[in-house]
Every structure is written in structure tokens, then in C-alpha cells.
Image (cartoon, rainbow, N blue to C red; front, side, top):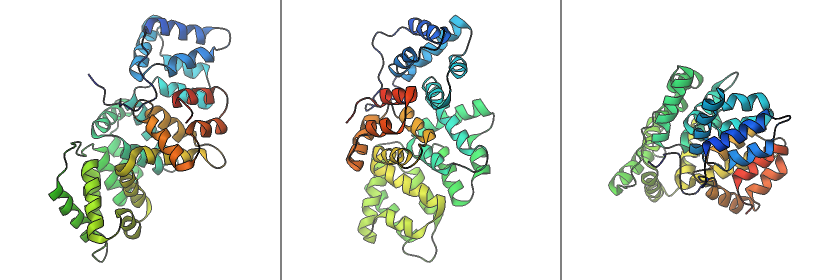
Length: 323
């Protein structure tokens, strides 16, 4: 069965001569020895797909009676530890944890919430919600509700529900109708009807929205982005602009997030780890292409100049080549 977490444009693929027991034993030796053999850990975990890593985790537990992630946590530290633990976490659980971290403590990391909820498919969102409940015994919706407010909250909850249409069929009549509704809800009235924006942008399929935005341009003589910027504000505006960006080009949207995480003083490792790990089997090749196209240098070189040590080595192995 094809996984909903695997695409055709990833940098990480299944390892051909895979043996979970051989890998589990090698990892155990790497951790148990005098001093950790980081090179061995990196080469195994970055060269196996997530599905294969899950089999290693099972095997490790059966053979040594311990959770691999706990042993990694006990033996490694800092950003390198976070990255290695991310690699052995099933994708839905990884996203659930990222969402929880975005809402924990003082202040909410709205950018992370927006990024995860706009780039995951409906089927992925349903699995993430299940994982969230399994780990935290609370629904994702309840946590979003208590951490956010207003139209932003409404739109996030709609996305978290995983109700976006996933079909690839487009309906030209509907696109014209929706474009008209959006025009009437924004440009063409006093005050904006935010609910209409939420409903259309959070529930229609990406191909359908692409057509709708073309129709919108015909009607209003401006891009939907410009209308959103003119009509809306705050996190709600950020969220809708993120959806539009993803509809037009998801890899470019994620390349921009990576660029922001890597430029300036200090690195945003939370974002860097999340995108590199979560897209490594989906579209990281396309993200690399977009990164190079927009910024004139490779993602590989950006990571290289901004990180160091085993953390750097691991990120570069997942990133794959230098463009």
C-alpha cells in the first residue's frame, strides 16, 4: 500500500538491502560503545526511509527492551538529538509534536501552525489529529481553540478537520461562482465577509483554487493576494496568503520558509528540522530547486554555512546533493 506520507520527489528512498535486525544491532553498538559512534548512527538513519526506520524501532525494542528514541535522547544532545529523534518518529506523530510545541508555553508560534496546516493533505491531517489525541489525550481542535482566536482560529480549525477536497477534477462553473463570491466578500463591499474566504480557501482542492484565482483575476483585475493584503490583517491574513502561496507552488512556499529560517543572525532550528525531515520523502528535491531559483545559491550551501558538527552532517545527508 502506498503511504500517504511518501511522494515522488523526495531525497530519501527505501534502502535496497534492508535488514532491521542488522541495523538495530549496529545502532545498539554505536550507542553502547565507549563514546557514541555518531557516524554509524547518521549513516543508518539518514539512508533508510521512515517506514524502514519504524521497523528498526520495533526490532530494537524487541531485542533490547528499550525505546530507540529514549536511548538516542540519553546519548545525544542539542539540535543533533532533536533531529535524530525526529528521524525515528512516525510522520503523523512528528507533526502532532510540532503542533503541540507551537502551542506550548508563553506565546503561540503561529508561523509553525500555519506552515503545517497549509501544507498537509486532508488524509495526513486526519492521521495527525489521531496521533495528537493518542499522545496528548486532548483533541488538536481543543488546543487550537484555546490558543488562537477570531477568524484565524476558525480557519485553522477548518484546516485541522482535514475536510479539504482532494480530487484532481476541476469544475469551471464552480470556479467562476467562487471567484464572484470572493469578489463580493472583499473588494466589492463595505467590510469584508471573512467566512466566505475561509470556506473557499480552506475547503476547495488546490487545482480548483488555482482556477478560481485565475477567474478572480479576470473579474477584479487584481491578484487574490493583493485583495487579501488590502482586506484582511494579522495572522488570518498570513494564513490565507500561505494557502494561496501553497496553491500556486508548495515547494516554493517551503523554500521561502527555509530561507527565512537560515538567514540573518541565528538559525531557526525548529523550522529547519521540521521542513527537512517532513519533506524528505515528499518534495525536498523540488524545494531545493525552488530555493536555488529564488535565492541564487543552493539549500545545501545555506545549511553548510549556518550549521555545524554532526547536526550539519545529518542535515546535509538528508538534503542530498548540492545544486
